[in-house]
Image 1 (cartoon, one colour):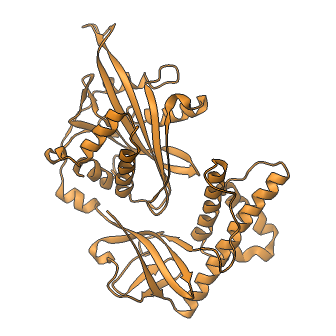
Image 2 (cartoon, one colour; image 1 turned 135 degrees about the vertical axis):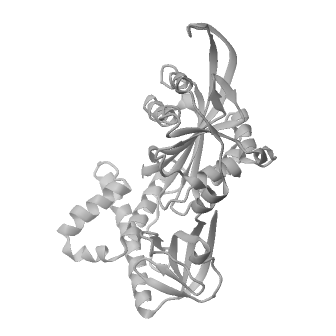
Image 3 (tube, rainbow, N blue to C red; image 1 turned 60 degrees about the vertical axis):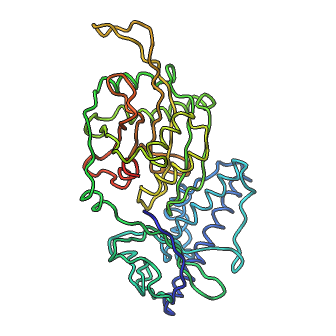
Length: 397
């Protein structure tokens, strides 16, 4: 469960100096990133991504320009976020979603100091104060306004901003549901036949592709959906098809009954607004209802408590299940059509470039070569550390 808040803070003089310096550095680095890429373009050179610029800035530019060493004095996560924001602005420009990025002017642009939880002592919140990385404990003007760490709430990430000489903090909090879920819920599961999964993966190649549509969302460090897409799978380039097929194939090809487990939906999942009914509606419309997709993105983003950018990819596919003789030889006939969706969550390598899936699901389950809408197969890349928040969303929401 996620909550967001914005409240005024009362930092000390020393804390104000640190905030002002960090925001000033973020504005400078953001503008420097824009200007550097503009110069590269004018010289006919390749665009530099945010990740590449960050490496170049810290390993080449600053060591060769000692007068710019003050950049490293600022909170590194905030500086990195300003570069990522610049890269996102360029990406939106390249996709014709916005105009060319503007330089940020002192006192006229909304530049903020981004922070994120780095260690257990960071981002704690009490009734009258909260702990912010590099600043330490900062007093809150309105006591008792935010949920406290003592009550199970933790700050995921946030920003410090200045407006008319007053200081504010905006933050995203999440309730740590892992212990709660482990002690209050016991989910039923059944064994997966590995042969069923292998049969599916044979239809997940460029030559024998079962997918007709892919949709997805990109989620920022605050857990907010920042961009979405929805496209016919056939319109992807050959390289895009290969890359996305590899992502989708990860789920059924995972180690059965270890990484990939089959779960029964609880009885209460039959409700009109349950996640089971949502998945069923999305499957039946073939991902073509954007309103339903947005609800699913919000549910999954709410259940995945991380402080990194990630993406949600949903695939829709159909498979004509051939009849087989007793010797398991195919009779080349089909009486059953398996209509299904695969969902994946991937952390981001770079802007709009996903890494391998860390979580995923297959709905409905493919059980004994038949669709079973009462079950869902759920994937965890690390079965020793299952994503309890996402399990709770899929099996109890």
